[in-house]
Length: 204
Image (cartoon, rainbow, N blue to C red; front, side, top):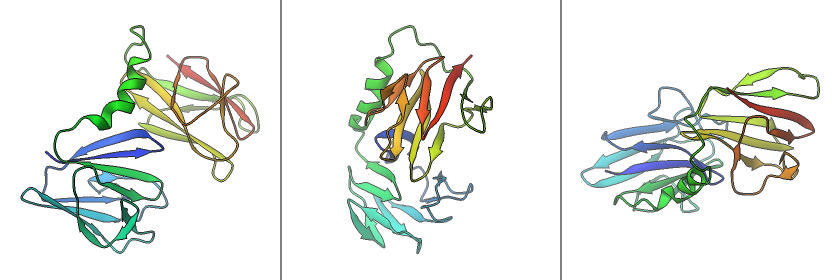
């Protein structure tokens, strides 16, 4: 069964099986694949299945739809094609390959056996005007920081939370260590410093 794997900066945020003849993609909540980002139009693109073939059609979106780096209006997708919308990359898989899981699996196995199921967690602001405020991590992906300065994304996984750099030249730090290209597993009490603000990761 064909599927779309949505990621940002190498962090997989959702997988969607294509089961319907018509699957819509966009920012508005009624789409089948919702990407909550201002670079994505309300109704951005549609995936149409015709037998075993899948066609991607851009719905006159503001910022366009790209397949393997080229702007497209309508194109048939092949296994392994990468659809780009804003900063998001959506990989099209159509032959049951699992290579797209490699990144996620590496992170999941690195935690050891001690990591239990993901419990409720929050970010507690420790400095600046909002000091003392707690932000519950209720969504699968929570972005923190200031656009244009530094933005990081905290992603909820079955075995815990990871933080990854989304954009910005000033790299955030976790316990004083700069955040690289690979997501870092968060543990209770970790201190994240981002755009001059200190935050603590709190997990119950």
